[in-house]
Image: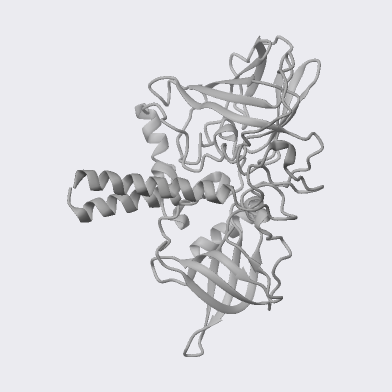
Length: 288
Length: 124
């Protein structure tokens, strides 16, 4: 029986994987932008981009040729994590919460993940009020495209989700020692080596959730992002969180999330939680 | 482990692996074993984050109308399947295939829709 059970589970997993692979190999839909339900992960060079309102890759293509060596100290470009950065169920393997963290997290009623409640009871300020998602939720939920621009003093990151930008100061300044909390905190960056840009941030606003599971954070949170340029067309992100007020130890919330570079003239669709719209959506659930 | 338990475990594994990713909320309230096909008239099309909604007035066997509230994904994720802000207008006659909620309320998740011109928009 145990063998039969193993077979059944293996068959189920196999079928699920087969379904995903089959789906991924379905014929491209003409005229549809690349994205969920759009063309499969053909080689990056064969992806058809629309003049306007592209939604993003559905999966990271295995073939990104022609690729080349990573340029030195340069993140310039539009980077697509396909659907790898959505994070619907929250960050993976968060560290244990402190007593303060448990109390704070206990007030969060999320739409998904470990604090999931029925949709009409969700109190996520992002999806029910249209509040800013804030930082670092910007990295842990709906991380879609990010475009990096370099200036002599900074690296500017433009995010598709919420149409937010962040200025990462790279002029040698230090993080503020007693920051006034901000929705998107304070960030400074430096090159750890010629291909790894390290961003340190503090001064976050603890009104925001850490992720879509309603994990909490405090104003004391410190974040380290490591943007590693693997090659000309590949980038990966690792994020480490250190919040001793909310968590019992530092932990890695994102581990080498993969991005590929898409054409620099790609127009992206708007994607944001407008306050009037999210409140109307929330009303739909109240009607249920 | 008996055969029934084994089957349930396998089904659970399959369900977990095949459940579509929904960015805003989970799918626990939906009866994923059930599919309904309904014909009706569009009363509202809400194109919004974090979810789009299509409201369809469906007449039952008794002739009484019931408005179904049907959820889709967000605009970014349904666009590749062909949905647009202008896809529906009030009064359109459509045929929808849906996954209803378990409670029996006239609420569901849209799987596909046949538009007035006969075009079918697939599952998001």
